[in-house]
Image (tube, rainbow, N blue to C red; front, side, top):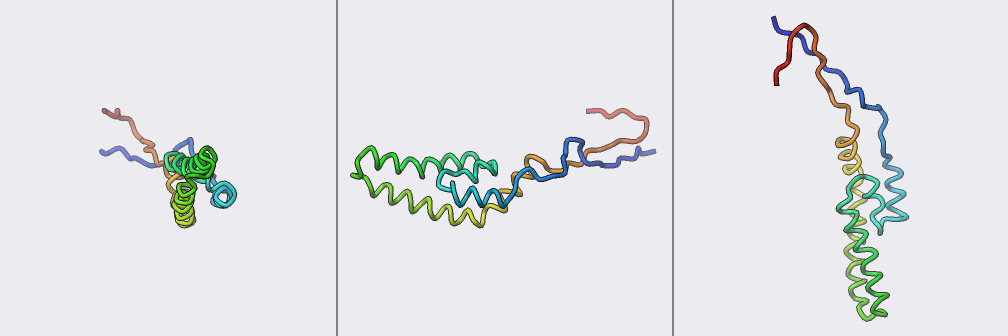
Length: 118
């Protein structure tokens, strides 16, 4: 006779989303050039790149007294386009964050007397 297996939600699942899309958009609006919304949504690699583009070009312009202002203009254009694309990408980033961190995993709950072998 086959043992019956039922699936239940894992005990560590809180049931509440840990991140809010509204907060992500607020961070995007005020601190988007620093990648704050991407840090918030768990995309740390691209957040560091946005931070580098936003602050790196500015610092380079300050250090060179504006001689390389074209670098600042180019980085601002790239960052601006990226931030506009992020408006559409943020819901997907939020879903991806929830899937990775707090998804309701179904774990088997075995019924019956038998041993499970690896």
